[in-house]
Length: 78
Image 1: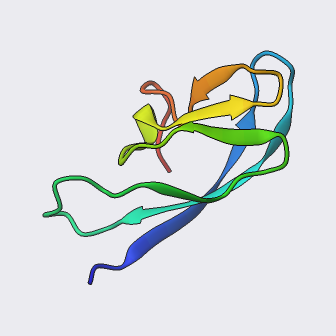
Image 2: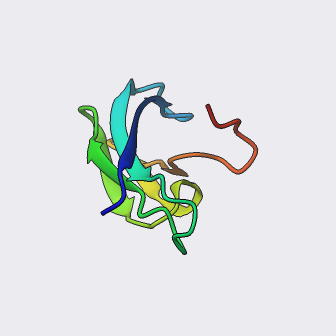
């Protein structure tokens, strides 16, 4: 079984300014077809709208109903 990379990301709603830190993880094995991305913990006020194996298509919903991807395609990865 492959190890999982774990990381924290600060989420900020572009509409209402709600913020918090999400705990996430994904497979670090380079030969996998997809990284099996998942959110392990969302901050208060944020919810899963659409799960995905990739950060860019995992959709978060804020309590104000604004939807946005967990990570934008133009955002740098750490």
